[in-house]
Amino acid sequence: MDQELVDRILHTPQFWVAAGALGIAAWGAWFAWRRDRWKGRILSPAQVRELIAAGDDPLIWDSRKPAARKRDPHTPEGALVLPLEQIPERLRAKAANARFQELRTAEIVVFDDTLDRATLAAKLLQAEGMRNVALMQGGLKAWRAAGLPTQALLEEDE
Image 1 (cartoon, rainbow, N blue to C red):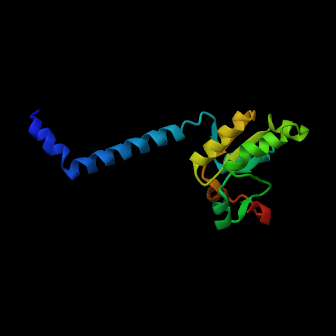
Image 2 (cartoon, rainbow, N blue to C red):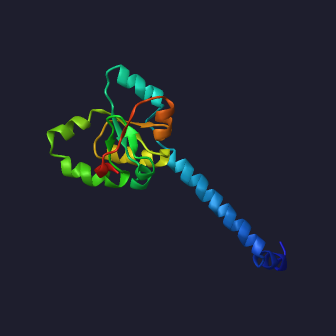
Image 3 (cartoon, rainbow, N blue to C red):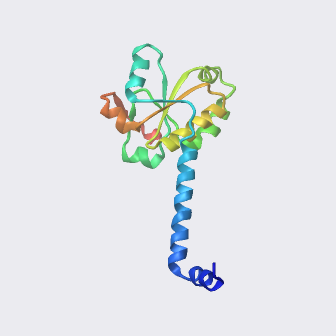
């Protein structure tokens, strides 16, 4: 390639706009690939309902951000509300508790408004020793669409 042509290309704004767009697209693809690397189970709300009906009594874990809980102050009936950001601190504080030890083998179903946040929460739970962690696809919206019961959040949960 002619050096003059290369210089001309490198000094045009269109080149840098295209290069920036390509970089952003590559980052987005990498992020989506990394986010979706959950190797565990992903359950639909109907499958969670089947677990409940079968008597497996899964712990449904609401890991939504406080802002999301303020927008929609409801959660699946009986769910534990603990945002992603608080998981390590809260679990380590309770690690000596005998009831906490039961969680290590309990069926835990994590949900959030997005699968990427739910995936992070589930990975944190696994890192803390929880063995049976699954994600629920679709979040609270899908839970409601499946006709499953919700409850209003307590003020301290919001």
